[in-house]
Length: 483
Image (cartoon, rainbow, N blue to C red; front, side, top):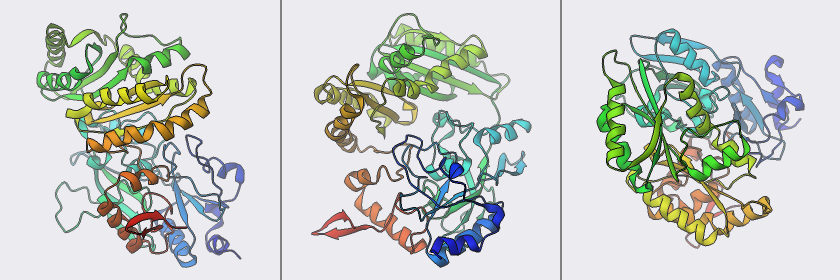
């Protein structure tokens, strides 16, 4: 028997799926950039069954690839094409274990869908603020493993800021139970933070304790046109000042991003009649029943207009209008797909450098892009922007975008590096960005990550080839990928 057959033989039949029709749903990544193969999908029902699976994989040297909602952008949950790696899905582990309303915490299985956690919190008149476009299908284990950001990070932070504790099955099958939802716990290393953003390369997250918040009573949403890109961060500072730092979302949308979407989705409408080069979707919220947030936003709007920063705008007059604003923002990626796809650059810089990065990056695309279209949007309130390049209309998109990848992308990443930014703001590394990490990552950090990987997972059975692995060696003082 093959090593993986030994593993499967030691598991209950009820958790093993060999149907390739089902397995095929997990062997190609969301962007259809990577396709692998696997002989079986494992669907455990408990942490103990996850532990048993990992112990067997460790014993027989079989690689294990955790899969979730398959909404990632970097191939982090896609097996290789060797057909020997087993897939493991925690979709059957989807219980809410506890809601402690007084402690403002919720403890859930890792297979819980994000929107279901929202619902569980709402039943207790509370809120879990992590919000993503894929929240109807992504699982919280995947959110934790990729350290997801989302549209509310300005106010509530990213996933790392929302996790109080984790339960994790380590590469040898041991269960690290660190689920206590304490705010303050200084008993040595915060080990659960190692697993956040690790993409299953150091262990499998099976449960999490998460922070909850009081839900907003008043929410005000505006769609604004601004005059200059240099006004972006001063506008956010002004909004924070007027609202008492109640801004939850601050999203930038370039005119090209919006035009690409509206050209292919004519049923959608531009919120502002007069065209502009730069738009901002801004939202503020408060749980206070007495704070006059509406008045604060109106005063902010008037001040921005008088300072000639805001040239036009509209405040949502109803929940439906608010949803219409967000519908535009959430469909921007679809607009790119419908226009032939894009080369994506998920980057972050200091918020103080955001406008300068956009200006300099756009100049690079103008200089080297041979007529390429540039779609810029994202959570600029936390320094994250999606800087995506599309082929000109009528061009051979695949061939053009391949040239963009080789000729334009390195210049964009060089610019990010010069600004001490990150080439991966919220999508993680997966397998897609390992070359970027080799070129732009801190070599000391990279070496430490590889050391941790070798120490915790010496057989490299946990999602091998993703995030960090030992297949890099030194040659004449430089790191190269070993064969």
